[in-house]
Length: 249
Length: 164
Image 1: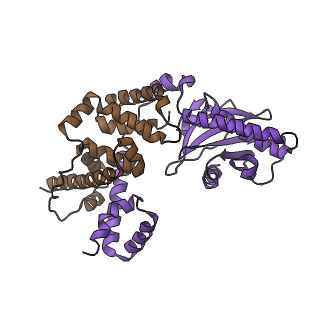
Image 2: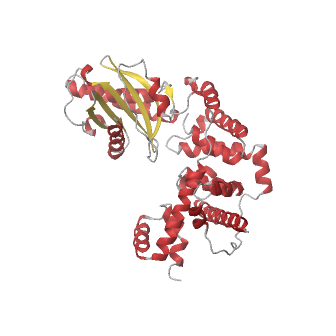
Image 3: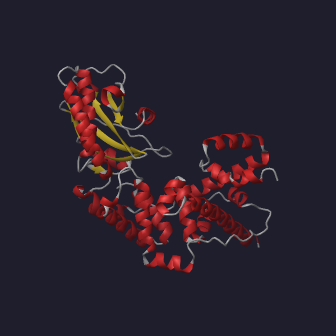
């Protein structure tokens, strides 16, 4: 059978684990071969069925609470973001040095961006980067009730590469805001939200260039809130997370 | 707690017992906290914590029993599948409740069950699976292939039983 050699690699192809060139030739073959495309469809259905069936168990509220009390309630021992501490500490020094060189001349706008970068780095370098540690947006969002003078929506992250790590209160120029930390492929991204009218500097311009900050950042206003998304992840990741927030708001 | 819900789900699939799964997850986080210094920044955190959970399972009473009764690597168990006209995929299409797949997964040897869960549910790359299970990439691919074959065989057997 001509297709035998293709079919032997079909699972690896569907797992997207073949070299890029082979993936392309496989794409072309599957499109032109009814037998292989039917087989591929069946295996995809099987993969989906396992994916759904495998997500079977969820921890009870009681167990979640017990674990939370045992582990999360001891922030000094928190390890969730610990692996970033060393890298973040180095980044603090770098960013701190860079920003201090420009502090005398930067405009109000640039100062806000730099402060956001400082907040991001300083938080990751902290021994307790988040005050509410949860991957569940329905846990994180209510935690801010009564702590900040506005409400916000958090995006659904299912089927995305992002995961929510937690949140904390933050201040920018004495304005209270929300700070969420997300994870994408080992990179941490901060999302900050403040009331636009409370911020001292006008931020009409688009995002600052990475050269200014050494980080990628996006900022925009929506529903009276000023959003900042910042991190050392790629510009595409920052943009994707920003889009999720824009869609959720 | 990163990966808490996923780890719990994985632990339940390994142990088949919610209480044991809770103990396993608790032990995993305790070990992770204690041994955090052994985590190398820049390496995969998810693979690291799953590896802790899996090692804790393998040294637990249930884990020892599971691996003692079933060889971890079932290299020679590629028997011919029962000859039936229906394919596992068409059975799945007929019974979309997922219960059949869950039953077939439950009945798989732990080595097959865990690798399928890591690949299809956790959507780990082969490299992550390799790090989690501490096996070479080639073994990941071959074991995954056998696991899929075994699952299809299990589904077919269930179908045959159901039609007789």
